Length: 73
Image 1 (cartoon, rainbow, N blue to C red):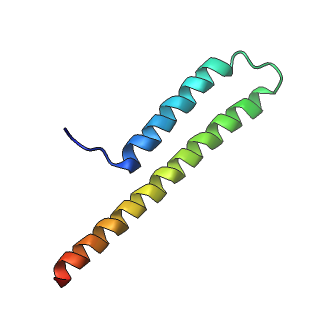
Image 2: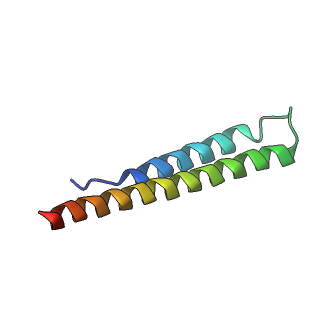
């Protein structure tokens, strides 16, 4: 079985969750303005993108360290 990277499955899961919650709750919420609704969802997507970039960088750094350790042996 193929192992998926954390930098892939976690942001995808959060993206699906955020989108599902937005589709379900945005039409039903009448207490806040439309602008605030869409800004909240947009900011959530930006945070997910930042999470993806940070996890990706962390994995690349870890791979580089492992390669350096193997080369030193």
